Image (cartoon, rainbow, N blue to C red; front, side, top):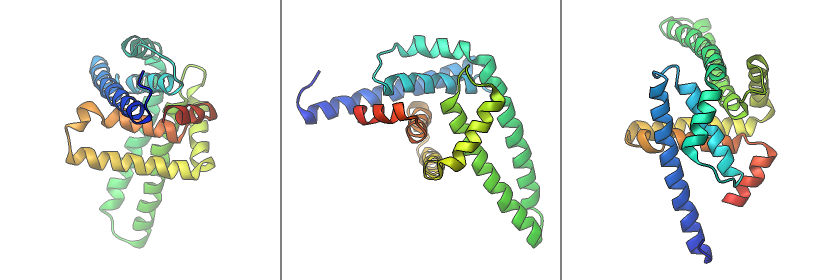
Length: 205
């Protein structure tokens, strides 16, 4: 382990770059393993679980930990994912209809639903960060929505992070294969973290 502060910082940065690239690739592979739609939410749960272990300073074998969490949370994560996707589909269809309608009421309804969509998006990341077998899906949904309003600064920061990562990835598609998903989840986990994770963040960075 390097002792010089500059060397230690460089070592830590290089370690996390390698970790995030590895984790992003695992996320893509395990998403494909679940035939895309059925693999994405268990893979997100697994990725956040590995990130949480690293933030706490615990050494873990990422592939083994990823697979164990992916397998254990497969049904649970897909139940949550199904609820979120149904809500998203309804919102998007309503937004599409309102976008093509004229009138003040239609415009007002469009922005209200857009706000609801942003709340749902932020809440879904809180749910993923809180997720695990200890919460029922209904309770997890309540906790996610409560945290959107209970932590307004963190919620706005999460939304800004999602928009920024999406914009950067649209202009640099290669990042989708190596960093986009893992970096986004790391940022959201740090922004929405528990007290224990906040302390770990200070120790790591």
